[in-house]
Amino acid sequence: MRRTSSLFIAVVLLVTGAAAQEKPSFSGTWKLAGDASDPFTAPQMTVAQDTKTMTVTASTQMGEIKTPYNLDGTETRAPMDFNGTTFDRVTKAAWNGSKLMLTVKSEFNGQSFETKATWSLNADGSLLVETTRPDFQGGGTPVTGKATYKKG
Image (cartoon, rainbow, N blue to C red):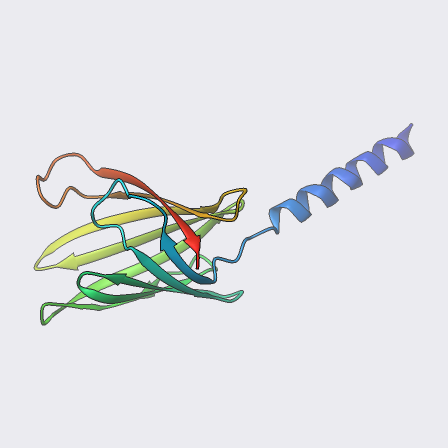
């Protein structure tokens, strides 16, 4: 009986450990599939990812915005130029199982704000990005959105 229990526990730990290590790669070029619920959603992103870092280059109406993340959960600085003014950004990525939680803290003209995104892969291989950001236009409650991207 004791041997069976020990074997069961070992199998459970092995399966749990293997499942916890399944972190997807988001590398590639992603194009927006259909309409996004948030007008600030990039129509295309290129992602470079290795075991330690991920860099997202989003193609937007303002040009390309490059954002680096450390995949070990540590923060990294990612200053950005907007209309000739550079503002500070600090990025952070954290894994929650197979989902990647991304946070960008920004400061612009004395105002600070935070955007959050959860990235996950759907069963068909598409990328689901769920975002929460401040309401830049009305100053009300945070705006949430979802966008689906296809590789291509």
